[in-house]
Length: 372
Image (cartoon, rainbow, N blue to C red):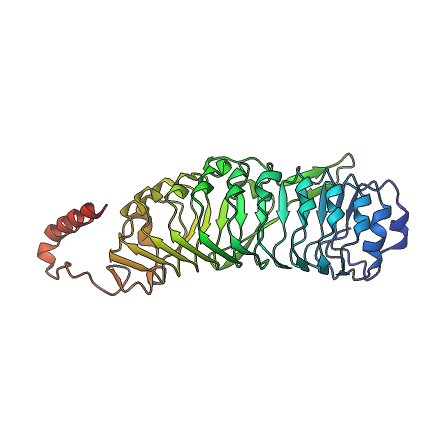
């Protein structure tokens, strides 16, 4: 019944359905508290999708009566209060969406008992404290972790590297600090060229199906994936206070499609091995403190469709060949020591005599080779 606009009240006839397994009231214009207060009576439910309504108040603790739940999606509402501690009694739970609400407080430690989670999306809430270290030990099967704009602070938990099945890590728009962990290179699923499908986590006997959805913000656009979700491998740590050197080990994530470290305080050079990320479609390292030459090997990244290196301290000539020649001036703007196309600033060693251009090209190549 998703998108049927049956609101604002929860239909009374539904409240007496004792054998109901899948309840989809997403985008149904429901605003009544009755739906949440009554849900604990529908104990046979395996999937609940109440996303994109106008539900208010707190998440009732009685929801733990639905002990067979596999899917719980309460995203895009106006829910407030703390995440119930008794939520851990939903042991079969595989997908939990509480994103785009007004939830507050720290994550209850009891959530560590939800060991079967594949998807955890708490994005866009008013949570507090640090990202718990137990996330890296409790959720061994986690494929998608979205904690974007949740007001978390502190350092990245070192045990995040234990999430060997993780395809999507989104911690953007928080107040995370410290270095990007070297141990992140142990996220083994991101090093694979092909990843398992998680587009449908629920499919019951009556052919009811919950389609997992993922929002990726990249290229200045908001992209939604569902059936093609298995193609997405993404790390977004943008808009934090992260520092330290660019993690060279990230270039071992051969399956990576989206990488965003923008708006941090990361220093160092981009390694020549960046060319190993052959699946990379979007790379945003803007507004950091990166320096040195841009690796000429980046011209080999044939899948790269979006690039932003602006607001850094890169220097020398832009390797404007291959795939790199497809990007405009804006991708390299506000790097005072960069020169060459597509910028209007010419490099000092570029001659103006066309008759000597061949010789100068050889000199340029020799110069580049010395740096890489």
